[in-house]
Amino acid sequence: MEDPGLDALFALAETVRERAHAPYSRFLVGAAIEAETGERFVGCNVENIAYPQGQCAEAGAIAAMVAGGARRIRRIVILGGPAESGLIRCAPCGGCRQRIAEFADKSTEIWFGPARLALTRHSMEGLLPAAFESLE
Ligand code: THU
Image (cartoon, rainbow, N blue to C red):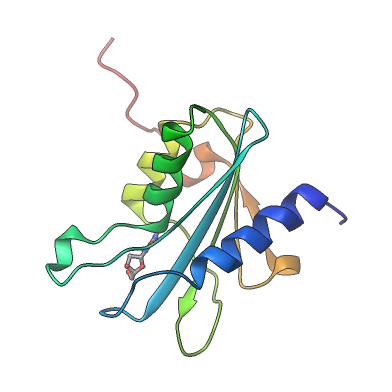
């Protein structure tokens, strides 16, 4: 289906994925967000020789969005795969599902897949059912 906005996010995620710093896993991930403002923000995974200090692509894109002044994710595209062999279907990890949920609502679209035409659309509730909300 034609969707220029999704095409743009896919292209941004693909480009930023190439910039990932992933010398330890050799697994490159890119994420591109369309915020409620219409602005787009990107992030890639940034690993560290002290492994737990590495950061996921989604975390980088969310940090860029927040620093840019936006607060809601309308759409996010996540692309990942081994440096040597290109994209596979890369679903967000559990921690990133929680990170996305912080800035998502019922209409937030989460897309991932191994190619533009193989992207599948997911909801926050589908990816993180019965999420923690608050103690109230
Ligand atoms: N990674 C992400 O960037 N996002 C995810 O949702 C899953 C995993 C990164 C972390 C690490 O740098 C590499 O992929 C391999 O796990």
